[in-house]
Image (tube, rainbow over all chains, first blue to last red):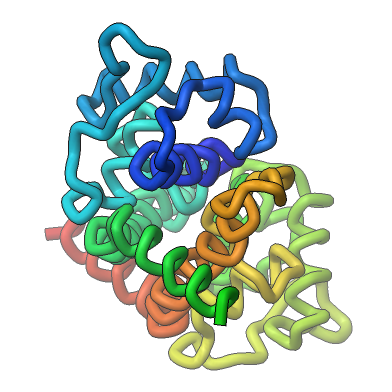
Length: 144
Length: 144
């Protein structure tokens, strides 16, 4: 996993879900601390996966999925345009003439799959609502 | 997590543990499909963490830790010279004047920590021996 697109994307979805005013890509960009074209790029990926919609006749987005049903895994896959999470890369040129070189790929792929399935399980059981809930709790703490 | 150093490092440790002959950095490099200086770099990191030793008077390495006690987490941390696994990066310039911008960092850090602890648990319960065992099983399959 790399770069900050996933993190910016969650920020964006919390705004769309929680802000009282309609959030345009420009307004979202100001809060995320990036430019509007980066937000529009993420919005395009979310639209493609039916996660958000542009509001007709106005400049803003709305969620098409209940935050409780929107998992981190779905968000991650949408913004990274991938179905495969990679936790580490496997070296590409092991020597086939050595038995270890011949089998290291399958051995490491098997271990990698096991680790990815644990990460995916965790990411599919954590939802946008969990982030919103955690944020509300922090707001509550701050006002006490 | 990035690059193929972790994967090459596991290949290297399997060779050191299992090969009948003494494995020098040159011999390891041939099997891994890289150059000897890359292997020496990894060897230096393993030595620093007391995972391997250079054999006195000969050109080869030996394991200082039982493969059953050598976890993927320890190997990963040693070769990446870090105590912190990062699964995703958090955007650095959220806008403090927005309540979501102010709290997104703490919210995402908390979620990230939860995910990392699951990955670390998995990586600390998987050992070099598990890789060796899996490789032996594949060798067995191949000879049947």
